[in-house]
Amino acid sequence: MILYLAQRHGWWVVALVLVWAIELWGEQPGVAVKAGGRTAEVVRRLPAILMGSSVVLLVAVTPRLATQVAVTLGFAAWRLWWSTAAAEVRYGLGNLLLLQAMMFEAVFLAAGVWRHSLPEWLCVLLVWAGAYLSVFAALDRRGERSAAVMAATWALVAAEVSCVLLLWLFMYTLPGGYLIVPQAALVLTALAYCFGSVYASQRQGSLSRARLTEYLLIGLILIAIVITGTPWRGTL
Image (cartoon, rainbow, N blue to C red; front, side, top):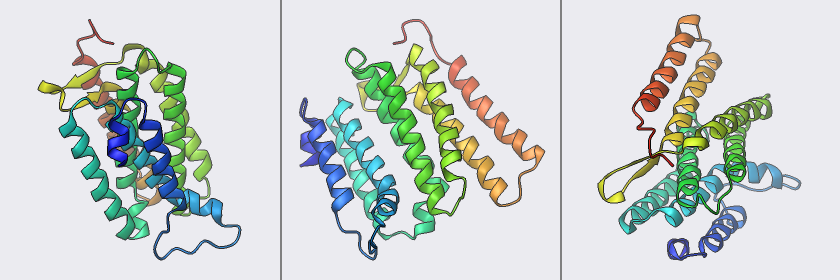
């Protein structure tokens, strides 16, 4: 039903509300909500809420039915995995990177498809909110005392990069339009990988100047490949 509503013109908001309602008020097996612990419970469910919201938005803006079905089935598989995986895996950096990639894909694809009705400031706000909430949920669950500060730092970086990339929003499209990947989503996902790798190495005590330089070079190379390989004439 949610897939059908997201496909209908103007009904994707209803599908979005349904996803929020299911994730916020649906029962989660094995998790008891203590008195006064509702806020913590919402934080625990943020990744599922953000992933579901991204999928609804992707289905709403993706032109091909086959792609819409594939995205929906992928989300169903992910949601099943999410409900059964161990907490340290669900809130791991690998799943966080996947979540951020989906969010960036959804926001920037919507910005390209709805460029006349979706203001740039709203896209930047969505990027900031998604980056902050996803990182905060993961780090808070891992017991990181500076989760809010680190999440806000990455959200600020992502928002600033988005402001620049929205000036020349470019899409990589497979023949037939079955897969459309915004350049901005690739750049931000690459940056998220680099920042996440630096954080993981630091937490494991294995961060050295050589490893930090390696991560920075990987990020710069990925960004350089994307930028130099872009035909800037005729971009959105």
